[in-house]
Amino acid sequence: MASFRFQIHILAFCAGLVIQSSCHGHSGLQKKHVALFIFGDSFYDPGNNNYINTTKVFQANWLPYGETFFRYPTGRPSNGRLIPDFIAEYAKLPIIPAYLQPGLKDYTYGVNFASGGAGALVETLQGFVTDLKTQRSQFKKVEKQLRQKLGKAEAYTLLSKAVYLISIGGNDYSIPLATNTSQEEYVGWVIGNLTSWIEDVYKKGGRKFGFSSVGPLASAPSMRVIQPGNTGPSREELTALENLHNRLLSIVLTKLKKELQGFKYSKLNLYTYAKERINHPSKYGFKEGKTACCGSGPYGGINTCGGKRGVTEYKLCNNVTEYVFFDSFHLTERVYEQASKLWWSHNLEELFKV
Image 1: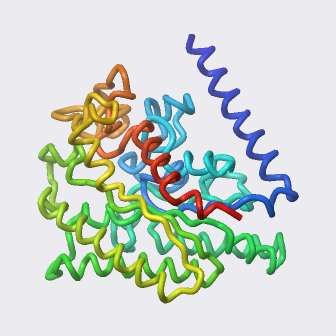
Image 2: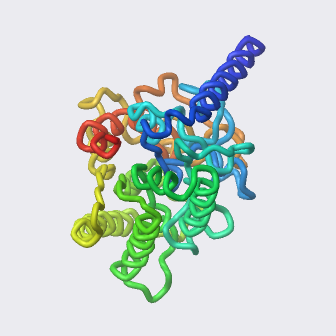
């Protein structure tokens, strides 16, 4: 059985490589598709953290992660696909690969820079993750490579037609705030760095953006458990920070739409969307909204899923499709799929029209 399962993993992996290489190799398709560039944190990370010098806390490259869809761990911190994977599928694109994936050379369909644990602030979990500033530097290298490969004009056309997705901010609020700093000032720094990223991408030709609001981090299983040595904000403080971030983000996006010619955006209200499913799971086809499928302790709130983070024992639910949370922090593939369908049909699809 184990041997058969291993063969399936290999076949699936190879098939994925064949599909991606054949799709990415068609230069004739370049004018008929819209590329997808992805930035952010663990909600969008396809496995970039597999390739950086970090700890297991910020990685997910072991089973049962990935088991539902890929049948093997990819580094995505969920049981299967994430929102960018579904959006790529709806846009008729191949799965967008991790930027740090070895051997990756073709970026004409886009690439994913997201890193689990990343924040908009360089200081957030510094040394363990690829922060937004570094992701911007990586994008600059991709832009240069596209110009060399396609020529300046065609590269600019590709970048101006592309869609840029980002999920960032949650990790900035999950750590202790800088001393002598008000919540308003701190959130202003985070939104300021996000705004700077928008303006940077805009200068390179980017016009179409998709934003995810910060999710209800205070409702994650990990926040329902008193963690040893925790010095971060309380659930109440975290909720206040999240709400302020999401409010300021909406204000900034409305302002930029007036100031930047051709700037278009779509926003997923992940906070409200996930909160609804956490509080009323049966209404959306789930049975459990507060406890993680994989983990240990009360609510599965201790981050031991897979037994690789210092504690080998953990509990795994029998039916992951019944759960809103997969591990102590992250949502299940089914939640991401529902969110992706909603976002796509709301107005994200419009951004992918050539």
